[in-house]
Amino acid sequence: MQDNLYNLAFERSVLSSIVFEPSQFDELSVILKKDDFYLPAHQDIFAAMLTLLQKDQPIDEEFIKKELMKAKKFDEQVLLEILSANPISNTKAYVDEIKDKSLKRHLLTLTTEIKRVTVEEELPSAEVVDIVEKKLYEITQDNQTSDFKDSPKMTFDTMEYIKEMKARGNSVLVGVDTGFKELNKMTTGFGKGDLVIIAARPAMGKTSFILNTVNSLILQGKGVAFFSLEMPAEQLMLRLLSIQTSIPLQKLRVGDMNDDQWSNLNGAIDRMNDAKLFVDDQGSLNINQLRSKLRKLKNQHPEIEIAVIDYLQIMQGIGSQDRHLQVSEISRGLKMLARELEMPIVALSQLNRGLESRNDKRPMLSDIRESGSIEQDADIILFVYRDDVYLYKEEKEREKAAKAEGKEFTSTYVEKEEEDAEIIIGKQRNGPTGHVKLIFQKKLTRFVDAPGYAQGVETVYENVDTKSANIDMPQVEMPSI
Image (tube, rainbow, N blue to C red):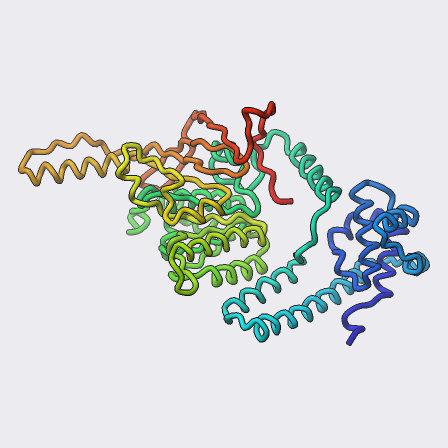
């Protein structure tokens, strides 16, 4: 059985090949991990090689020895065995074998973990399933929980990030494209591991807004997972087709189109057939079910770059605890899942109706329903606001009051096909707050960039005193690296 779990000769041969041909280590360092090696001394030598690579120093006998002695992990006998091993030409086959045996060891460890949480800790079955799925996802993705990152590792990764940004030139987009130029400038896109909250009162268009983002991404060939707890998948598709074709949504619903529109629709259908869009429209979903589904989907389709949940307050809680505690568990679970899968998760959220009693009805952070935990866990909070929604509502209330009093009523409200809209950035952990102006095209349920608009930015950074610090704060978000 032990031969099934490790092969020390293979490990020595691979390490020997790296010493005799260091140029291949750039590629191997991406494939292999320290704990893929069974022997602790082999793990130490591989770790020393990684450190030398980060320092841009030679990966040879003397420098490896020096690095190991510095860490007080030098074993002369093991190093001699590696140096005396015959270098191999087909390194890939040996690496694949090492990876295969490493996977088996991790799976064996997982079986012990299952026994511990099931029998010894007596956890509920739902929690056991979640733990097992998470561990299994980590194993299959080669994403094992790592130790502390030391300074050389962090500085190396940071310099690589800075070089990548320099190579991009003037591009403001770091994360996932929002679909809107001005919003991209303000946020640099939705970053890997970000929890993004899009909040609004009913009828403001939060679903329409995120569908514009989804449409932009799928037309770029990006993968999107959409959990629609409120709307059937077919209705989402109708909205996306309206956005793409500029055919009014109502005409699409009843099939009332001319020949050109039918032709346009057929073209959009062909494009959507190739789209990497995955919709789950199960009406009831809890955080454990969502985690399980998204992990499996991401494992099957690594091209998925963003997940959307419409909307957060409809998600079911686990157990019988207070609803605020359930929402807290959901928001924290979504944030941890975003980090685990290294992708942004966008959750739509309802706002409290209390804001409608204010003169200025533009939302604030405190207006988010069950806001405490959501506000804390979110990296970005965007509010969708359209003043015309309230103007229309007020007009209808005046008309109702006039009729109740038997008075004649003359409406002064003019319904527009295109309305001014605002995306208010209420929170951004690594960037400025402020607002972006958009145009909402009602018949198409489509948001578009406002022409020639230069937004005013109120630059506010969390936990940074920009007044006392004599520095210019960058507007580029550093992702998790």
